[in-house]
Image 1 (cartoon, rainbow, N blue to C red):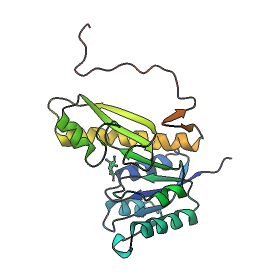
Image 2: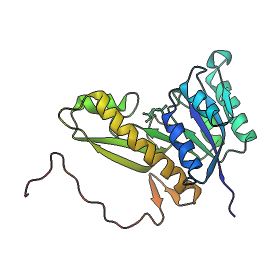
Image 3: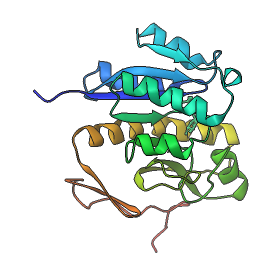
Image 4: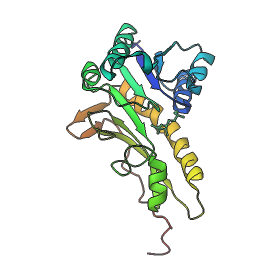
Length: 221
Ligand code: GRF
């Protein structure tokens, strides 16, 4: 039997993606184990969610560290101690230092609530909503030195309707996040992701049968 993938999940907030990862593990769909959740925020709802499922949690208070480097090196120390092979950013509201990135080359994933490279940075859903796009979605990518710039693993697309609000669009995107993040992790666990420059090749990704989509729908054109 192959060993389970050891995950370290970094959070700062509500932890709904963390919850989805936990649920997929518990259902046996995601062959991984969360060795540690690290929260940069002691009040994060995600801390409770982890504890509810007996997942070990470390809370690191940024006020107690002299620099970003010190904070990140403590995180790296904990993750290494727990033998983490893949670091999952799930609403982690800090930019990682180059030193941290070097500790986990090609082994850090993030999820962003927009179709990158559009609308990177904070409030991707709001940016897309205000821009007036007809589709938005979410992106799981490997993390590099930039903000939301790393090689893309999977994207989920959702429509934006005329009567949407920022909130209704955000909810629709979040629902897709909860599907694509566990799948991206499972692809990694199966060794099916190869980073080649900017591209991530997914082995045995399935039939090339994804239909073109239009919003509003085409009527006979
Ligand atoms: C999600 O919208 C994710 O795309 C972004 O931060 C949010 C985290 O939400 N990176 P949650 O804490 O997983 O509920």
